[in-house]
Amino acid sequence: MKFMKLGSRPDTFYTSEAVRSVSSEVSSDLIVQVKGSRYLLHKFPLLSKCLRLQRLCSESPETSQHHIVQLPDFPGGVEAFELCAKFCYGITVTLSAFNIVAVRCAAEYLQMTEDVEKGNLAYKLEVFFNSCMLHGWKDSIVTLQSTKEFPLWSEDLGITSRCIEAIASKVLTHPSKMSLSHSYSRRERDDESCNGAESRRHKPPGKGWWAEDMAELSIDLYWRTMIAVKSGGKIPSNLIGEALKIYADRWLPYISRERHVNKQVASDSDSDSDSTFEITSRQRALLEAIVSLLPAEKGAVSCSFLLKLLKAANILNTSSSSKMELARRVALQLEEATVRDLLIPSISYANSSVYDVDLVITILEQFMLQGQSPPTSPPRSKLGFERRRSRSAENIDLEFQESRRSSSASHGSKLKVAKLVDGYLQKISRDVNLPLSKFIALAEAIPYFSRLDHDDLYRAIDIYLKAHPDLNKSERKRLCRTLDCKKLSVEACMHAAQNELLPLRVVVQVLFFEQARASMGSGKVTELPSNIKALLAAHNIDPSRPTTALSTTASIPADDQWSVSGFRSPKSKVSTLRMKMAEDDLDESDLQSEGLGRTSKFKAFCALPTRPKRMLSKFLSIKRNSSEKN
Image 1 (spheres, helix red, strand yellow):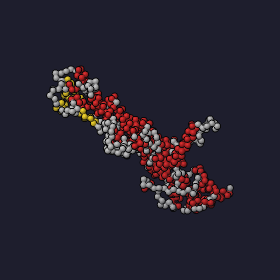
Image 2: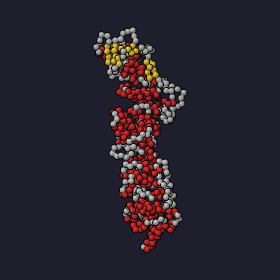
Image 3: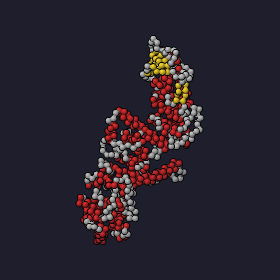
Image 4: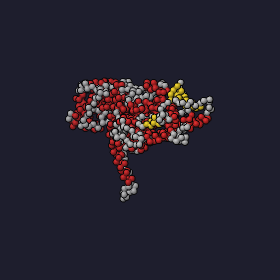
């Protein structure tokens, strides 16, 4: 960092009885009071360089020995005034990026300009500022940061705008050489010298050397600087996104580390002092500013970072527009998210749920709005076939091809999002305060074709049933409405067949499809009657399709994992079915819709003693005989 020394005399200021004086053979005749401090000085050296002091002395009455001048609104305080006074006495003063703004504002306040004396302090400071401060990277950053203490003076003098322009121009100078590995200052790079010659004792800076240094700026200065950088159009959007992430990690505690926030924490924050409210308001404004700076390009920032911003926005209770913008941005990259990313704490007093499910539903709605299927063919040209195709028509074809590609990509994204939502349902279903309506809304938000199998969905339903044992029969039916038994694996079917919490209709479906699949898997497909084949075809059962085994993860507690003990025993399935028959009544319409025939025949099927496979053949023979009679 550069510095400048002015004056040659030694420092002769001293303090005596709370009064600052200067050693001199000439008696003092001027008393200056600056923000509670008292200075005993001389008129001649000060008035010869300070036009304001000249005017104040001429207006104030003279006492027996001293003129008394009061400067209550002096910018920079006693430190800046003392530097200006020492300059007037010719005492050596050192100026750098840390104090140049304060001294420049003080010199302007005292009117130490060229009109009073050639080579005055204001002129010397301007030369040093333009020739050295604006040419050095770290000097520009420190100088800009120091302007926040004197915002009005810095704006009037053009210090803030010139620093922002200098920083932005340095960032835009060599965008092809940048890397976001380390801060420019942390590489201990020698700054550019006053005449612009650079030191050769460092490696060339890489991409993003500016991000960590700029993260030291306050949010208003950072926002203005980033706007200037973005308006240059030379920095890739992913570098802008990485810079914003570095800044958020630096200033937002909700981003830099994971914190469990619940309603008790929000309640404590509400009861804190005004200082806590001020900090929260400042962080809220900071977050909204970061959201406004996010690049428009998809993938400029990671989905995980966007969801962290959304969590912080929820905690800080930012504006609804900021939340919706973040939700829309998350929806564009939702396939990149993880279940942990979607666990947004709920701080609303309207419900007692642990997680904010409404926000995730909003994200899913935004996700489903994108990637709509394109038209089957592009619009025809109205100029006729005999004319030459215009460039606009070619553009229409290109846009059509792009839309088809984006549509196919969105299908793959929906497959990933379906797995993500089912995993999210498994996590939140343990919440005893989660309403059934929200669980169903999340489960039904995913299109049917996006779930290649329903094992994860069944696991989530099973966990929800265990966590909510008070659900009645109607609510359990609503819960299982999205579940498709044809898409369950063998292991899931065996678990569902003896699940006492499932509705009777689901258990019947599971038993039927499992037995039909087992019969066809044993090589007896050709022996099945035509009506059973038609029934299987109506339910899109493909016996050649291999079943997928469920994966057990460490994140699922032991009591939620499926046990395979006793699954191969027919008695377990039949006893479960008998128990459910005792507690539930099955509608005849439900039975007929599944192709099981009349109620009496179904009861005969449920009365299987110990060998369901043998009785299934009897059931099939009954159906065959009835068809032959007809």
